Image 1 (cartoon, rainbow, N blue to C red):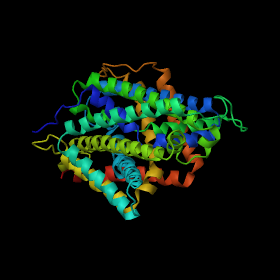
Image 2 (cartoon, rainbow, N blue to C red):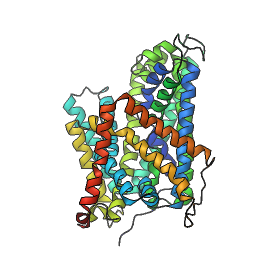
Image 3 (cartoon, rainbow, N blue to C red):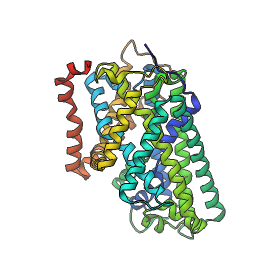
Image 4 (cartoon, rainbow, N blue to C red):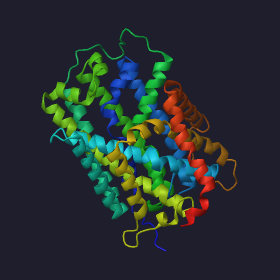
Length: 433
């Protein structure tokens, strides 16, 4: 039987973590956070806390990955800790909404920024978005090595570009605004700070996806934990640096009012050329993010099919390229449908927060697994049990905050995920096809 090829090393694993996380959010999300926490020091603190909580999740993920170095990542952790039904629900939500919706959403952002240089109609934006999905799916179809190298290249370019933006802001920027730490007239409440941290955490999304490729990673018990830690630390440093650059280039009030803070900061420093530079950076950033997400997702569907939780034909490995080619094609087609119909917007916004339910369960799995005699991780989560508990509590708060803020869509989102249960229990005999 053809097996997956181990082609991912530490550099590519780190790039998969960092390149998948750094998408488009960091170029717009800081304004939302500044509105909630109108203080330069407060905003920087939000990003530090969000980075630390992401790191706590990465610690838990790294330990579980070292104990279960199999393709599928979070799906495998949930299946082994709880039951195949819980693992199936994760994969169900991933395919129909969370993962495919992220691919569609970021591909559309990519296309819109391409439109900065070449005006595009709405239909053309959708065609460009579908085109980038199909092109990157083809790259990953022909070998994980190609997709990994592409990810490494684009991640290096993104980090370099962020460093250049920071340098330009320091050399030519001068906000003339209030000194760091001086808040606006609004007091910062605990609730507002918590909402801001939740917004920051969404900008860190995708950190766990490197675990999906365990069977294509060289020495996964060491490489994946290291990649998780290095990638998360790299992103945290980049995010804090970018926010520092924004505030150095713009007064606090302009950051709060901005709808495209990265472009406004670049224009303040470089004039009209700033918009073009930021648009080019966003194109690079989103292209790399889409590639990383496309690379990761099919490994979960492949693992589910191999475990007879999906159709058996999805578990096929290409005899020449040694990739889960059918899972890659299936994901590309569904993500393209979501772009073409625009339905990714409603599905994505309703379901994206539910992944934090599974993240909380994953971290809780550390406590359950450590009681099992067969559980032998080669990496142990730092700060256990305090840090995993903090991550679990943050997951609960994120979900609770979303339910309180938008009960209708939250209920619909939970319903979409729960719909997978009758499918799992009533349709399993057909997965043998």
